[in-house]
Length: 256
Picture 1 (cartoon, rainbow, N blue to C red):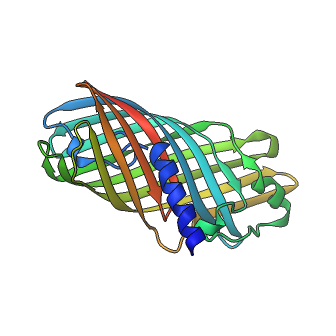
Picture 2 (picture 1 turned 30 degrees about the horizontal axis):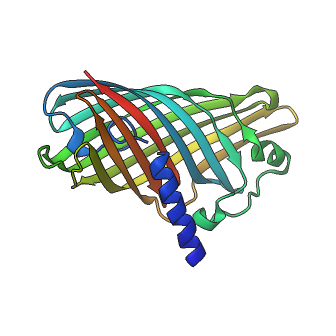
């Protein structure tokens, strides 16, 4: 038990320093939503690691690096819309984080096992967006309670083994921000998220279709992060996400 908590604590520290932005990334920090009509342009990097079930064939670990351009639009002080698009890769393998995610060894169709275990795709399309709502906000004290809905679709293929895959990630989050440390605004929350997808092989020697879904005890997770305000327009943001996934990233946002 002590070893498991040590691993989890180390992961929290790591991903808070290498982690995805709320305002322009996955989940919002309600205290940073502008008070009036506002536009933003940002760039985000996200590293996502999740446990997926290959339905009827066992478990697999999914990893994706995502580089996305974010466009944010806030028409009123309690509502924001973000659209994002860019590139992402995919990697499926046997479980390497079994101490945390409780994954079991893959047991997929025999002819596909070697291909899927090392199924790493180049960067292909990824895109989606989110709706953010500030339920409670006091910008003078940086107090906020917010709600987010997110969705992200990504597609990848590997021609040399005739494999293609798509994945859709969706989620909802509740975020609380209660502390102001000058230009640093931390926040935390919990989220409900899931994924669905499919892997197809058109290889004449091994044609198959594998359906993907979450392989977690609970779809509910926690996340934490911080906004760093730089001048009047720039924000640097960090976020880590745990329990239902082990993910994080970072982003910059420029408000016009």
